Image (tube, rainbow, N blue to C red; front, side):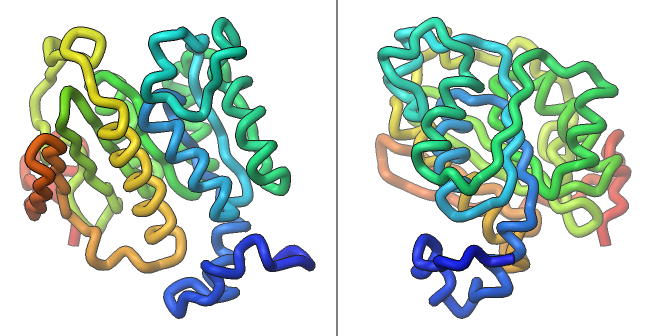
Length: 248
């Protein structure tokens, strides 16, 4: 039920697209956030602030000094602390009504499948293709909505995956990309991952409240240097090894 004091969420409840019904959907939701780095930091903060009832945080890394340029959920005095523990401190200070569950180890296939099955929505904030492909497969298997984003250098992209309604992540990337460059290799501007992580939270909120019709199959690209946005409609791949082109 909505909390007795609704003032925390008053500005959202005022929106006709949200209202009390939409706010209740958020409070009843369980968001699985995989990765508490540059993407997961703003995503977790905004989902907690918006009143998503439960956040499950998955990350087995510790906070390093080099993280703080972009991973805004952490702080200097938490260097060496597990990222999930650091994130818990920030989220509790922001919204103590949001329940936070932590998983501070790398999930195996069975554990990942169980977490995705229990989630209302999944946010892929990981930093490698192998993990993204694995998350995509499990989300398709359990029909759990997924919001996947990535950022490197001064560029970012985001794709929502709505099982049965549009393309999946491997419709966009049908092949393996293990040798693709990483932020550690190429660098990244902090606000770029902040923008993409915030967009992940935004798209997750739209999906959770049923305002997602315009998101189906839409890949959004961001070039920070030119301040240009581009949107592409990704087709369902009938030969996709994961979804098999089964979207309606």
